[in-house]
Length: 100
Picture 1 (cartoon, one colour):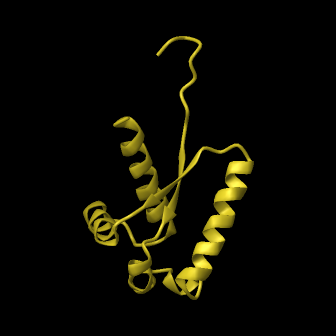
Picture 2: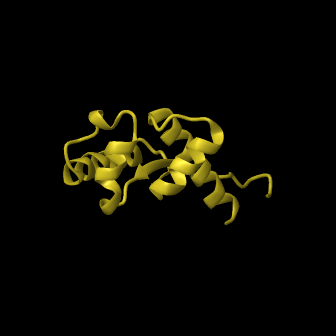
C-alpha cells in the first residue's frame, strides 16, 4: 500500500435470512428481545443501515448462516447472544475484506 493511500475500514450489520428468523429467535438467548416478526426487524435494520451510512460509516450487510453461527459459538464457548453475534459478524467482515 502506498503512503498516500488510505485503507478503508468496514463494519458489519448482521442480516438475517428470512427463512431462519423464527429459528434464530428460538435459539438466541435474547430472542425474546427481537422484533416480533421478520418484516419489522428488516425495517429497523434498513433504517439502521441508512443512519450508519449517513454518519460516514462503511457498513456492510453480513448475511449469516444460523448453523454456522451456532457451531462457532459452541467451538468458542460463546452464548448465542448479542455480543457473540457482534463478534461473529466482525469476524465475517474481516474474512470478506482480507480476501479482497
